[in-house]
Length: 351
Image 1 (cartoon, rainbow, N blue to C red):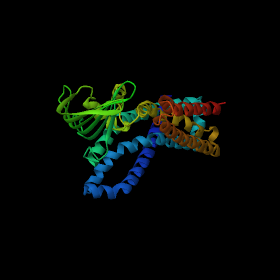
Image 2 (image 1 turned 90 degrees about the horizontal axis):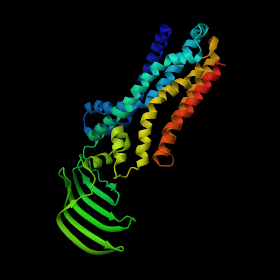
Image 3 (image 1 turned 180 degrees about the vertical axis):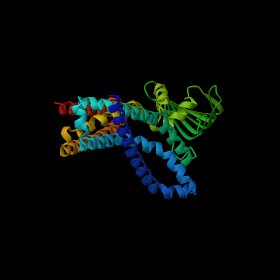
Image 4 (image 1 turned 30 degrees about the vertical axis):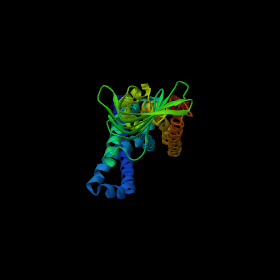
């Protein structure tokens, strides 16, 4: 049994790696062709093309892993069926479900690799790419922050979030009514708290402006932590799961809705299981007695279902980020639904 397991594992691992390398190389080349003019115009160096490619490669590899597992396993099953090796294994008492179980360790290996990529490597590489591609943090747009009783717009900020410029703070009461508007040229965090500089405070009473008071300096006691500001500047894709958990526990939010962070966070744990789903969806390519036409039909069915899984996952992810669907459902429904379809096809093929 161990001989068969090693044989299948070696075949599937080599085929998945081969398919993955081809797909990743193809997408990398297409990405370079699409962006070569922008890279040379902005960076003015051919060597920077390799830097650009190195930053983009982890995202590309992460995106092709599920399809590589699907195509790799289908082609292995078709090859085994064409050489009648599946018939020999079935004659030796191995059921189709048992054969799938023998392939499981390799898919678990790729699932673990997928998780490391999606949660650690890809966020870091995307953040490094942005810093290399557009070093200035302030690119002309306002950063909006929303707290329990405050809404803040920031025109300029340092990368570490300890220095802000062009602040406008809108203070509200518990009913959401505007009570004060505070404008400050600068804000700095000294480790103990925020200090606003060159401040103009306008108090409101019943929606009408009353008096305007100016200060050289004024403490900002309920301002967000610099680390929170730094995280709120980033989209969910550039944050590791631990940072997103910390951000969701904060009272301050940014322009990105919490639903987007929750959907991304749920997807981090669901995405690696795509390799296992693809293995189940590839199982129809296993047909007894080496019937090539039946094997090809099964392979086409598995490929169609695998592509449907990718499309459904993308649609539900968009709905989860928009808040139209619960993040847990958006992340896990495709995995559970298509996993159930794969198990159904596997069980039906053995009857």
